[in-house]
Length: 173
Image 1 (cartoon, helix red, strand yellow):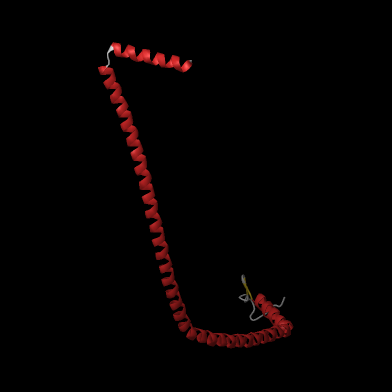
Image 2 (cartoon, rainbow, N blue to C red; image 1 turned 180 degrees about the horizontal axis):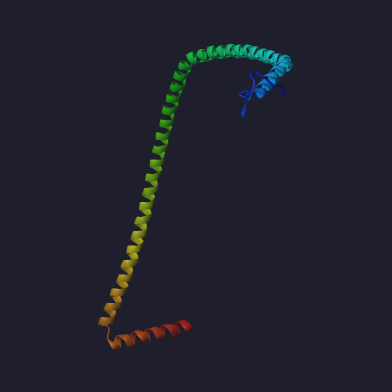
């Protein structure tokens, strides 16, 4: 520890928390550190400088490639309008062809539906006529039964029974 004597009895340099010897030690440590680390730091800075130069060269090359790609993209964009028109015309022709194909398919389908509807109407007509004939036949039988029941006398009934028995006997023999 180094003690400075500026004035006798003066202890300002040894004030608690402000000891002058701590600052002197810090300055000495910093000077020795700089002296020892000067070469490695210089080498690291030189290496970093070279890396930055290399990165700048690489960035310039990348920029040049990007400019070339930009020029290529501009040429592609200039051709894009004509290609868009070609695709638009082609899609318009395809859409018209598709529209005609769908119209023809729709017409065929409508014709099939008409024929199917006619067949179904004919079938429904036949079924209705058959049902109507059955209904009239049942009503005719019912009307005849009712008429026979109301107009038949007991001797007519006996006569019919005897006739049926005679027919059964003849069929048996």
